[in-house]
Amino acid sequence: MPHRLLRDDAVLLGMRVRDWQDAVRTAGLALSRADIATPAYSDEMIRMIEEHGPYVVIAPGLALAHARPGPAVKADGLAVVTLAEPVTFGHPYNDPVRVVLGLAVKTRDTHLGMIAELANVFNDKTAVDRLAAAQTVDEVHSIMEGVA
Amino acid sequence: MKIVAICGAGVGSSGILKVNAERVLDRLGLEADVTATDLRSIAVQGANAQIILTSPEFVEAIGKTNADVIVINNYFDLEELEEKLDAALG
Image (cartoon, rainbow over all chains, first blue to last red; front, side, top):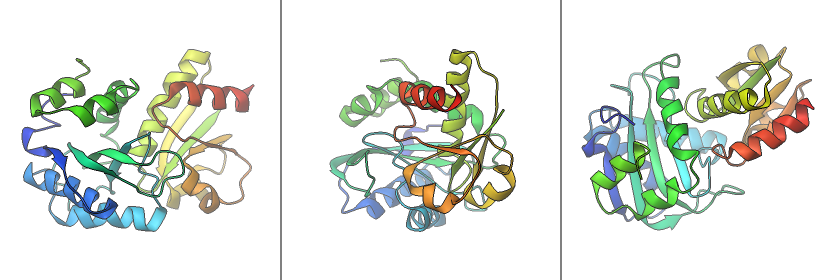
């Protein structure tokens, strides 16, 4: 994962959150800290889940919070938030969630390169555990680059 | 053959399904056109699809279709994808 898509500002480790909304909002905070999205993007990500259910919990322990491309997205980018205590999203198989990724994309057509890189990282089943245990931003970068 | 991956936004999760489905199809030696799209576009995009890939939350909303609806629980589990795609195509 190139650093331009995952900036240091967009990594928040060991966060304490009350519930899934708080977890998604924290991913939104990380995205706005890194100047990838405006604060309004948090609400859009929450609304997607309220509308469609917890489908963003795409693998055990991992949520990929995201909304549609739109004016709240300033650049393609990613946030990584790890949780001190796991939270449940109400997913039938993949709860509880320990790692929340925030994804923002400018256009639908250009995002598949970034998505393929995400698949490279997370198709390794140990990636979520390693991220959840990461203590430093550098550790997160090395996991996200596929370097253990 | 046409395969459509569905999620709420048409980016992100459906993109991951598309990327990983293409990897599995390659492994199985099969060729297919895999599209990632959102629920709103299903009527158009899914019209002539043989397979719809999605998560449990969308099955009801997708509704009646001629396509095989394959529910994927873990988007990063290539074995799950391969097993379910192979069963549907075999």
